[in-house]
Length: 269
Image (cartoon, rainbow, N blue to C red; front, side, top):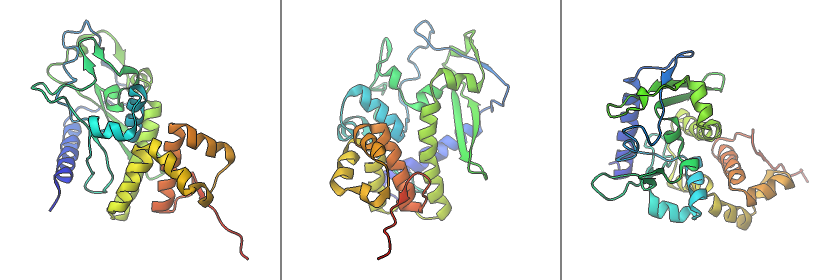
C-alpha cells in the first residue's frame, strides 16, 4: 500500500503529464504575447493554491534569500514528497493555511523572493517538458499555459521560447534541474526504486548542501575520489559547488558514472 506522500506525488505527476499533453505546443520559431507586472489586472492571481514542487536548485536559491538552514526550510516551508516510480524526493512548497492558500512569499506588491523564485515560476506561462534523447542530450518541448484568469496575454510584449528563457534567467535552473531529471531517468531505466537509505542520501546531498558540507568533512569523502584542492575548497565553502559535488557523487555511487568524479584507485601493493 502506498503511503500518503507517494500517492500524492503519483497523482501530481499524472496530472502534470495530462495537463501538458492538453496544451498547445510552442514549436521552434513560434511566439506568444505575455507580460506580468503590477498594472496587469490579474497581478498575483496565479500565486495561490499552487502545487509547486521544488528542485534542489530551487530550494538552494530560496534559502539563500531567506538566510536559513536547509533543515529550517524543510520544517517551515516544505512538505516532503517522494516520486513513486523512482523513490527520489522532491519537496512541495507549503501554501499559507488560509482560505486562498496563497504562496508564503507573495505580497500585495508582488513576489518577496523574486530574484530567487523557483524555476517553475520563472518558466510560466510556458510549460517545459524535458527528456534525455538517445544521444544523451536533453530534448525540450514547450507548451503555452493559458489560464482563464490570466490577462498577461493581452500585453504587447512578444516572445519565443528561447527569448523567454533568457529573459527569465533560466539557464542555470534548467542545467541543475536537468541533471536531477537525468538521475531519476537512470533509476527508472534500471527499474529499481531507491531504498530508504538511498533516498536519505539524496535528501542530504542535494536538498541539504549545508549539512552535506559538514558530512563531507566529517566522513572525509574526498579520500574516496580523485579531486583537486581547489574543488575541495569550493565544495566546502560554496553551496552551488556542494550541489555539483552531490550530483556527481550520486551518479558515482548509484550508477558507477565517473564523468564528474572518479573513484580513487589505490595502487596495487
